[in-house]
Image (cartoon, rainbow, N blue to C red; front, side, top):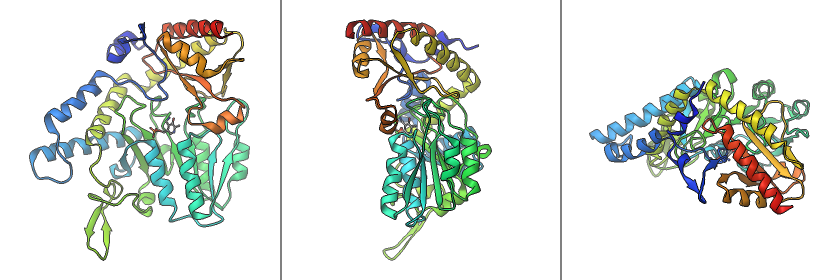
Length: 404
Ligand code: PMP
């Protein structure tokens, strides 16, 4: 059983007042809050070991390099990758997806197919559209049902020997749907296609095992899992990372440069051109340690309770409709109130200290599917409480009365 009050004390921002009210932070899907250990680790890096990595023989450079590479191994262990060189530091999920999509430009040809799903964030749609435009490949979309679940029978139909890569999120940011990715990975492999999993919304809630999943790529952002912004991980199977061309050219990613020809460095450096976000990469390791000290089983238990309680409490409100009612869901509740624009509710409850996300959540195709302009999204983290849900429900009721 988690001691939530003790955990909340780790997050200085949570005791802040916003608009004169105690902050209720339910926008964790956009970014999570940061515990003091993470905030401190950033200062400590700059105060004690700041130096460029992989370059110098001097002591600080070696300390910084060691800390950066230790963090890579921490991430490797966390996701159970076979090799640490399969774990690339990136600036986030968007960067990781673009890196892979860009690499596939050298593999795809006209007539090949890329499969995405109807549940994707724009960052897992647009890079693939750009890839298709560049190569003449065709984008196919796995449809969903009214509950916001992908239809697996349709996915099976879309797969063929033309499919070169499938790309799907582990968990939907807009609706919270948990996709059956193990099934989808195995099916993609049956037709010889690669598969990328966008784990941006999964890693704050669970610990992925990339070897058990057998996915080819798994990408995520650090800032949604208690880490700093501008950090992320792209896991890729060694064979795939060796096959893909580098994404950016520059320092650190080369073996030898002459004006006639450049040869590239070994993994992971081939994909890490230029000075990286050194502090960020190191502190991502601190964030993972923090989350593991809470324990993902405990996190899931707490979040599931919040999901159940929040769903039940919100449904007390007349005219409130939850969008996304998948059987397998994480702690995200997207909802609308009949006749009221989501922005109006969001703006009023912000005045009452409640931070939720309103709008299309970078998933316009999902909003189009449900014929709505957007939703109000409450996304809970392990440091949230039922009392906070009560405050949100009261605030939404007040906003509804004011706007009706
Ligand atoms: N995919 C999903 C499912 C997301 O929720 C997000 C962030 N909202 C992204 C991709 C993009 O992540 P980032 O902005 O950190 O690159």
